[in-house]
Length: 280
Image (cartoon, rainbow, N blue to C red; front, side):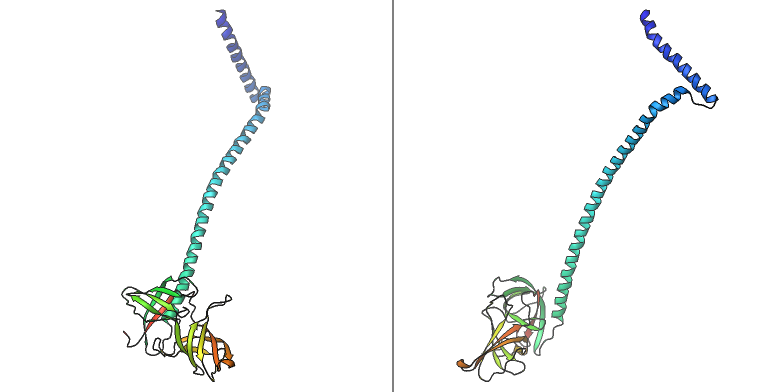
């Protein structure tokens, strides 16, 4: 029984204290005041409550920051991907615009008499090297190319087909070391043969016009066109412009001229294929 009394005594004391404190609190409230015990408890507990509130707020801010940071990372990743796609679209658009400009130039290029347009062909292959300048071209399906069809770029001579198989063929360009074309000065009517000048000093494509003998009248700025001699190319196709003339008095008055081609062979992506009217 002593043990039971020992256990009940603290409970009774706590109950009595609770009753007394409650009575004191209600008595103070009736008088419009707060009980002293309440003020003590508030002073003891109040700072802790404030600290807990601030800690909870801080934890909430950290959690929000982490969530916001993850969301911002996702948004930044999506924006970067969108920017990359836009940049790729701009590059594709620029390529399409450049190709369309070349196609319009080829489709609208002037043609000399007795020549008919066969097709506009796309360059699908190039032979590497500085001396051997050949390309593989392809037309639209249903078009049949033929050997010796002539290649133009912007209405100017670029080369001719040496092989053809349906819509595809191989062409030798005028800058190939084995190519030659008969030309004539549009102003003075002096004639000669045009060969590829070996590349030196990093200068661009040049043709050398040789076999100009006697009282030849050649000057920088003169326009050279095809003469039709040999019937490999039709007459009057623009070839290039004279940029330099050399005269050798000790060699029987031989004159040699350097001619810059009008066709930009290295950058060409499309050519116009033409055929002399009446040829197969």
